[in-house]
Amino acid sequence: MARYSFRLPDIGEGIAEAEIVAWHVKVGERVEEDAQLADMMTDKATVEMESPVSGVVVELAGEVGDLIPIGSTLAVIETDGDGEIEAPPADTPVEKEIVAETPGAEEASVAEVAAPVPAATPAPAPAPVLASLAAPAHDRQVLASPAVRARAKDLGVDLGQIHAEGDRIRHADLDAFLRYSGGQGYHAPGASRARADEPIKVIGMRRKIAENMAASKRAIPHFTYVEEMDVTALEDMRADLNANRGGRPKLTMLPFLIVAICRTIPQFPMINARYDDEGGVVTRYGAVHLGMATQTDAGLMVPVIRDAQDKNVWQLASEITRLAEAARTGKAKVEELTGGTLTVTSLGPLGGIATTPVINRPEVAIIGPNKIVERPVFDGDEIRRAKLMNLSISCDHRVVDGWDAASYVQALKKLVETPVLLFAD
Image (tube, rainbow, N blue to C red):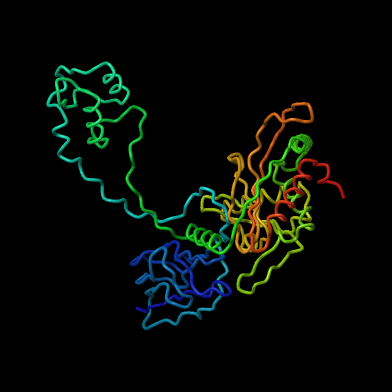
């Protein structure tokens, strides 16, 4: 029998190591040529490793979550024949990408990709002290005040289980039973029982998100500015356009906001920039490659709308739908998840009153629209119903001054509150 050592190939420029995020084989199993061996994650993509030979797997390099250097042995496969089989060079390119990713900069609650670890050992049985608190029979006559009876009924506690220190059960006896029972002696109606602790190993995208968020907060002095905007007229315009859209995609608030963002960028170029920490260089971009924070089952991704400044609201709506679907189904390409110059993050209907989003490093700003609410507002001497939305912007204070951030948002506010300006030359 011959042994084939499969070495981890070069899977990206400048990549020194990759993380094992999934094994598709086990030691002792037979694997066929071109069948999946493992999924490996780098900073830029998750790549599928395929077996170059058929045979029986005799060694695997590590466990899920381990980091494997490029060029080191990933798996050893026993094939028919004699001696050792020479593996291809470690710099052989890998072409098949199954999930490309660039973790975003948003603190949304996310569905994690993690390998469950066996649950903790169940808690020990209640202490023997419970025996002295419980009465030997449930059909004995119970003496208690109406207040104690009412409280026990609300808690779902059988007074026959409680041992009284005196001639009747008092609140102190009920408190002692509740304190020492630890939830074992009763279960109040509508209450939830505690679940067993479940340790989750942080691997894959969740680890990349954690690392990126920590690096962003550690390196960037954030500040957040929030402004309220009256979007009544914009919402009326959006409703009219949707009513006559024909076969075009339905418009949400986001395409209009992106148009406003792009139209105000030329006045405030420091918002659409990247900061090179090591080189001490800020690059102000002429084009707006807008990242769009998207929640997926695998975690937070940020697909990028290329040259957003050149697209109208209908084109933006189509691109938003396409990129979000690609991210959620794991079909987004590397180039669709990298190269952003500014990010927008929206929690959609969850919205919230205001957000303090974390910057998608090395960008210097992130914009967060919040949910729309209806409230009465003063319009001169009149009171009218208005649709209001808060908009947050978090900026890197090393690059963007507070005055500039506030001025930029005020310019956005003018366009959003006078939506006809969005379509004016």
